[in-house]
Length: 308
Length: 234
Image (cartoon, rainbow over all chains, first blue to last red; front, side, top):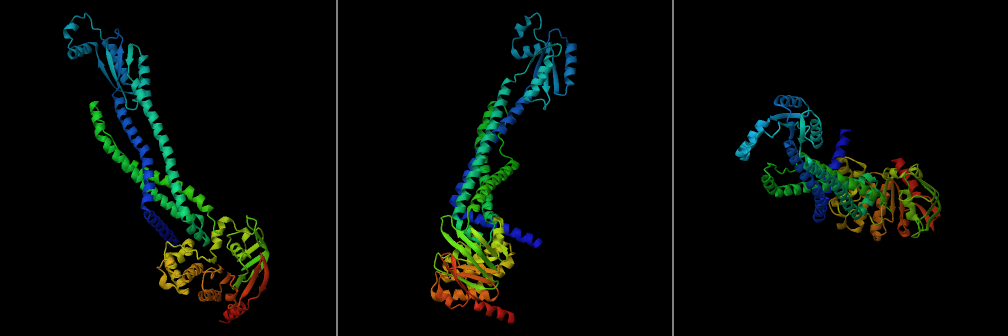
């Protein structure tokens, strides 16, 4: 049995190398097919890279959003501390900072330069405030809103402020973009299958005589199909590598400007390219798509070739 | 080995190629199918190799009713038949040895066995020195011999040939026929379709004469008897 397995493996290795040799014999046509696959895959892949970066960036911003809880004037410092303690005990709260009215006034006096004018006030107009930081897990759009609603119902709480609207809009836009990535990915993936399928179809028509002869001397359709499937694997591998390289180049070109832009916003965001794992995944998907496209075309067209 | 029972074959274009053909070819026999072109010789070979199916009647090959063979069983079925074509049907993009090796590769023989058998088959047709040549570098007669080597390399019990000498000058044609005779002498059933009556006059063997899709005449095979006797004696 090991002998049979060895023969089988040797035969497949031979077909694999043989199909590569045949592809290399037509470098221009091969390059075109591979380039089409590379470009088709690079587009959704690049969009996805941008999306991932945008998500990473906004995830950072989301975390920065604390809730400002303004308390009733009637709530004294004791009750403020008690409320802070109560909030700290919540599972979705990471930290609570107490800013008393006096502290707030002092800060404002120091920071604003209105010192003299503030002295004219007979009483402190500022309320006691709690700065509530949600836990990482609760830092989603839904989580922070739930937290806000919950805190707003507590006694002594006057208003809870959270400027989430634009974060929500951004998240909604990212969701749209995510769908766009999937749609273009799906369509262009289908395109890859069709391109490879068509290339293989032409290849089969060119080698019609050979397939006829093979069938006449007892070849099964599977046997006749095998070299074309291996050919498609090479196309997929080449196209996948091409797309990874294209995206890497695009990321390298954009990295500088993005860093500059982020710097203007005081953010340390850096553009991240494809990870090794993602790149491997892309190769796998590319090979699978082109194999599938070839399988469909080859199965159909080889069956149709009947020696006569 | 081969039995036709009231076989009719009508092609989709309406032409009736065979109209009730019945005959029997024994195992180990050499038989010529003769007749004018269009008499039905090629149709009979196509029915034997399951390239075509009969419209009516039954075809038995090697004890098997071909009607019972489903499309997916055809490749396996064809591996027991060596086929030689008038136009050789060689693959021009690969050397002679690879052409001859094709049936063995398809049948999944190990590489060492393939090399051995390919060299043996090429030796039998006298082309061992040309194993690395491309088919188009060879003469027509040599190409035909490559085609024969490919047909016999897997040692099929049945060898069929469609006008194998059609493109050859008389001397080469005789050589090719002698080659077929040699394979027949070692027990292979050989069926050759040819219109070259002068050529086969030199090879006394079973003849099935076709005319307009019918068997017009049939002669027994004296050589077959003698061959059987001599192989029994040896």
